[in-house]
Amino acid sequence: GESVGLHLPTLSVQEGDNSIINCAYSNSASDYFIWYKQESGKGPQFIIDIRSNMDKRQGQRVTVLLNKTVKHLSLQIAATQPGDSAVYFCAVVSQAAGNKLTFGGGTRVLVKP
Amino acid sequence: NAGVTQTPKFQVLKTGQSMTLQCAQDMNHNSMYWYRQDPGMGLRLIYYSASEGTTDKGEVPNGYNVSRLNKREFSLRLESAAPSQTSVYFCASTLQRQGQTPQHFGDGTRLSIL
Image 1 (spheres, rainbow over the protein chains, first blue to last red):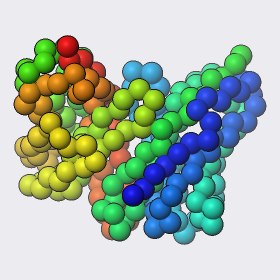
Image 2 (image 1 turned 120 degrees about the horizontal axis):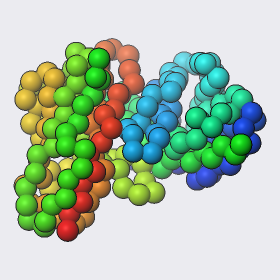
Image 3 (image 1 turned 90 degrees about the vertical axis):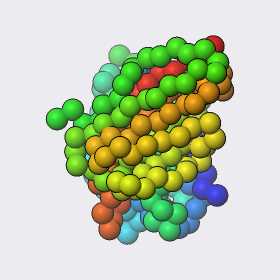
């Protein structure tokens, strides 16, 4: 079955620095990838997504990189701000598996002032 | 727009009691989902409804039932609550088209079973 993991459970970053959050997945048939941000007491909030026919996608201060060869996904946050402190989840989808999301365990990002 | 609305936000039950968690979305999405989130773990799919009138089991369906009442509403029922069902429950929805689209989540129901 699918498994999704994160390399670092907690990431401390200085305000203004860039953050990189990593995610590994196991199913090579995964074809859609999503990053979510979850603040305390809230539900996951969509940040950015990428499909398997792309290797990079940029949003506002965020970039997602996809390396299908090694089944690795990363989220880069530029100029990290205190409001970026949260838990970040990657989620993968396989159309062949019915488009259901499989979530990683989450990485907590702590922004130091 | 409210997005995905879950009620109640908090609930405490005794073992053996029953409870229905409500979820409604106003985004005209066709697919809806129920997840549970336990400490240190990612979200796990309990049940989902790909479209109005259909429901299917997810990864952890035991002890739960669901009802897709109409396109907007998808409820989760615990018939006989057990302490192992203490968790945070999230409802999500998405507009399932040919390509995938992200799921949008509610803010959760925090359920404690004593």
